[in-house]
Amino acid sequence: MLGIGMIIGGLIAWLIALSSVLLPYDERFLAFIAGLSVHYGIGYTDFIHLLPAWFAFVLYLAGLVLLYPYMHGVDGGD
Image (cartoon, rainbow, N blue to C red; front, side, top):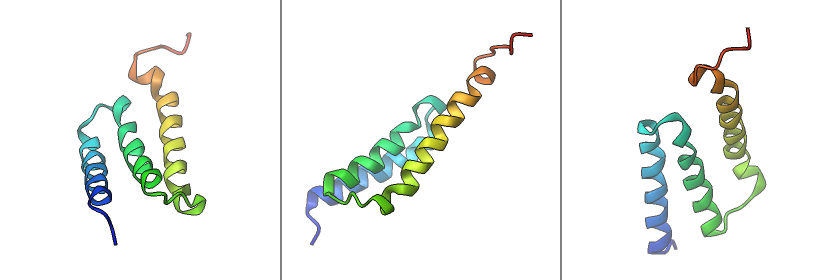
């Protein structure tokens, strides 16, 4: 049986994840933090279950690093 704290935590994480599409690109990591923290909060830390979330987080970070010059108008040194 789920406790009320788990349900409220899950709903908050879900709302943060949904609202992340409205956040600027450099603040969308909040959706990853919300999703992962709920899993750790309820003790469901199975590696295989969380692997897609961690993989998506790594892709997100790689995207931020690779898009930094474009998003901030830095030229390639030409």
